[in-house]
Image (cartoon, rainbow, N blue to C red; front, side, top):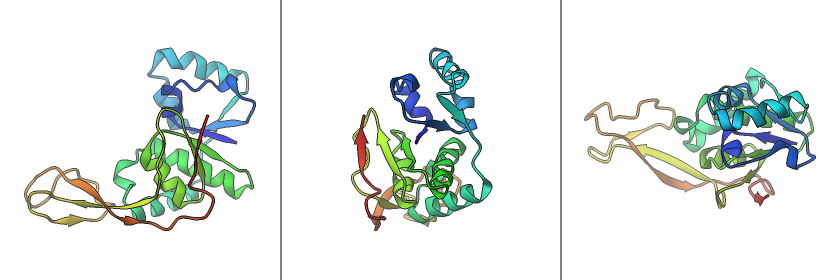
Length: 179
């Protein structure tokens, strides 16, 4: 089963080109509704039951947020990204084999941590899972990955991030498959 992110549609993914079941999150639908060239294909896929829009359960959103904070990608994930990841995790718990279709590296990093495969369309995808650290390049203050501001609270400089270390990943779940 494919779990589609907005970036899949932006990269030209056509729901009618494959037979596999496809699902996406309501926030993806909201984002697509603002992009008129893609909207028609998206809505036609829903009408023809090629694509299902489904809300993930809250407990899976919480689990995804925990993993995203642990690896340092939480600040870089939108609500849409979190919904896509939570939906994939929920499908995995229901004994499906979900694959997230996304070119977003933060989604791919967290997907690897929760044991969900991903497919990248316009990029090569991540090669290894990383734990990120956020820091101020001016005063060198370090921040947790859950810190929601883009600026240092001490000096006001825009925060940066750097890889802290490579993270052990579940086996056989961190490969990128090209379509």
